[in-house]
Length: 164
Length: 450
Image (cartoon, rainbow over all chains, first blue to last red; front, top):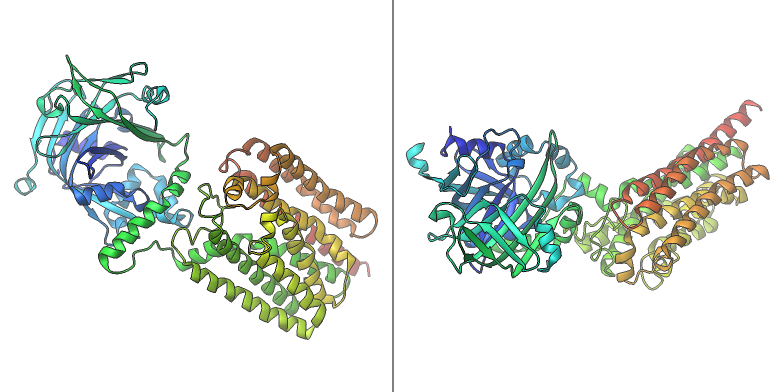
């Protein structure tokens, strides 16, 4: 049991892809498809330095949203639902080389099992494995229980301190 | 991406859109919704989401993202593609319309993930440089030193040296001369020259721009990329090349001093010349379409004759002849690898044989050269220059056929060529070891028969 409604937590635990939207230097939204991970308190995403523009955007403006929208990316989740979580992100990158592994590797490999084999061959793509973790503290969550976004969402204000 | 019919065709392949905008609290809001894409009017019409919080304001800048993956059980997912467009929202009756003014995206079926990563290397290095400046200490990509050595030296390619040196030793042994210690020293010196060559090749391909402009490297082409990835500095690579060449020169001089000074020094100097000026100015043999000939000589007669001379202390036409098939096959390794590199090579002025020839000529050239390899062995046996067990080499011919078919089919894609490139290296190794095995069988046979 974490800080988000159970229906959204199930979605976060199941979805193989989500859309992270950040704010760029012009104040515009920019969206990146990423794997969502969840530790009961924070949403965790991660990025290679190769694709680091999103990290720059987050450092300039930590406001982000995560959209869980694609039924295909949530195999086996019944009934399908959709959700969006708004929150504040910070970039964790004290050690780009291995610092991300204890934070996300187990959860990442649970969704993308081949990743452990690829990591063993990091010599093949060294820069891909220099990675930062995006740690998102949820502030507000929107849930469309049947996935129908033409209906108004259920809205949840997330107050981690109160719910812990 | 251009705002054109192709973009709208691309968008229509997605199941849903994700409407995004900045809400009144300054947070991005993103919500999935249905859409219609009209290529004629270049307009996207989105279903208006329910609830005020999920709706942009009329006239507000919005972005619309489209994303797709295909889950693969037990692996993860594939078929990744996404598109994002931006424009101004026009709210209508239950709809949000937008005429995109900007678009970007990626489809892994059009641009492989490996190439996407390769194109992003400057972004990754710039990010790490920025972190270095912020932290006041260098932040750079790392690899365990064993992997770094493996990568920087392109260690697996040492088979190219192993084969001709073993062959030279085997020919000498067949003629009744063999010394284990000398054999090991010869192998070590040749391996060090080869490692020096690999590192030097990276240095000059970096300086001339051939490797930095290559965004389609494979494990067999495009260099080790340790300089481009910031794993080792140019100065570090120069030091490494000097170390390898220095050690090989020391062993080579010892062998020359103790065995046959001027012949071995001559062979060594020719080998060193080919090794350095293969990519280095002013000769840049590879850029003049002479790479294959230089490689065939260096990894064929020069190494085989050198190894033979250390053992036998005399010249041998048999050693030279036996090395020619091996020389042709190692030149073909280079030749096939150059197919994958031909665009960046041409851009950087590296006019290899493959760059100079048409596709048809390149493929035919491979067939001719591979066939010549086997004809030379058969002819050598027929005239008594090679012992008959060396006909074992014919066993590798099916591999050559597979490589020929592979380059015909995969000519236009560096990644489709990875299979044929790997097989081509196996072809050189298998044929060389079969030739070596033929000599071992012949040597043992002649001893048994007295």
